[in-house]
Length: 284
Figure 1 (cartoon, rainbow, N blue to C red):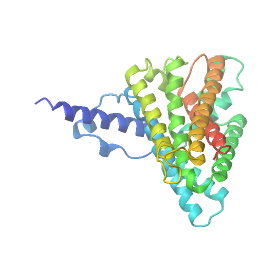
Figure 2: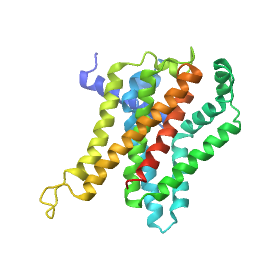
Figure 3: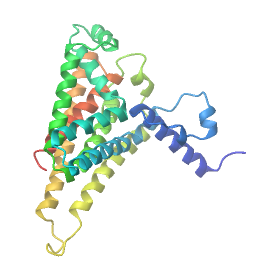
Figure 4: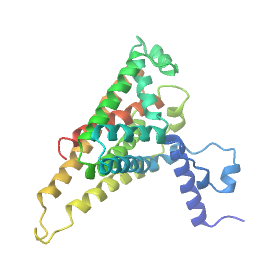
């Protein structure tokens, strides 16, 4: 019997979310799948799942921010709390994006495009990779520690959302650098899920700002307060920082590799988080 359209649509959504979670995290996903999907040997629709990547990033950031907030409530100093929160993030994601950052940094030492791609395939981490990882952790930990604990949850959710949206932007505007791998499995990038992912990113950002901007208070008579304007400024600054990170990593990938790989996407996510969190310390 043919399943009802609503059931079929729900199954597709669950499969997309499971695909996104399995790629971006180390969380179990089998509970999302129907018995038929668990028994199927067909390849998962990686490209179709891109619409949920920003939402997964926002959720991960929110969880990391909640841990930081709870640690600060327990009177732990800001920097150790930020370090533990980042360690928790690495447990959730398996260090996937950090691995991509290290590989791309090591690839910078190659003299030719082919040599750079060969270095990035090597599982060993060189000095460039270690430096990139160390600096990225230092920037993110210090930025999180500098944020007020009550705002860290929101700031990390925003950075996580924008970091995964950056993956969509790069995959849309760069060709795959290899004939195989993650980039090739996403090519050609389906435009429907791409635009849905970008719209969900905008909706997520808008939902966060709306509560702060359009909740009139009795004392302000419905006008925007200084704090509300600060949150609008934060949203614009965060978006600008994410775009700057996309341009930086995308330009480097096009020049050095002729396109993108899975490692480039991982590097873009980490660099975007660094830029967004650093920028937010200037306005929050």
